[in-house]
Length: 263
Image 1 (cartoon, rainbow, N blue to C red):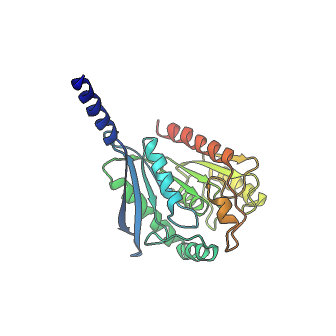
Image 2 (cartoon, helix red, strand yellow; image 1 turned 90 degrees about the vertical axis):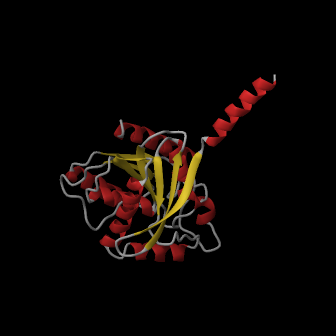
Image 3 (cartoon, one colour; image 1 turned 120 degrees about the vertical axis):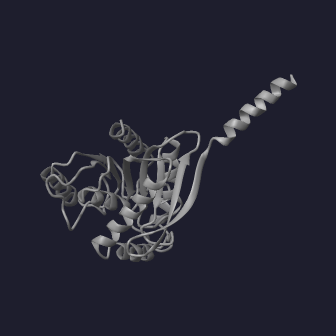
């Protein structure tokens, strides 16, 4: 009996050691900004695996973005939630979020440089297969990953969740190498019907491989469980709201998309 219990304890000990590992990694962009990434991977998986960059909402690198990195690690990916604002800054105040976002977008090279610095950091991790890379983004982050695709960054695919669709530099024919999945809330008041139509026209003209999913009843921010609170906060938040069905549907779509592009 003692021998049996000892074997059980050994087995349980082995199981407890296999877990999602996380750590913060300081890095720097080409413009000299100090950035802090949040890296996650499953240590029960041996060897390199596909890598996925996570780009945060306009709130900054908060717990939600970090949670999504852990979720991806649980699916078997090497995941890095990158920092687009510097020093891991985040906020729940819309005015601060707007200021952070505007600073990151002050010129195209700032945003693209910070995205590239995060992608390079992910590629450097021993758990990452540098030949299999993708990026997902939320709200502001959705715009960031779509712009990376427009610029021809060598990614297998990008996924935008309730992301901004407008751009000052439309994709040119043949430029977009990444496959694109857009998960859009049908009730998103921050992205107009004209924005949607212009995006589809742009992608068609560029010859991009894309899929656009309109999620019924979903507003901007539909994937974030904190959206209801942030949208009705003491600071007078934007028109956003959580939608459980849209969250689950878009996440399932993303999983199928990643499996396809990495197969």
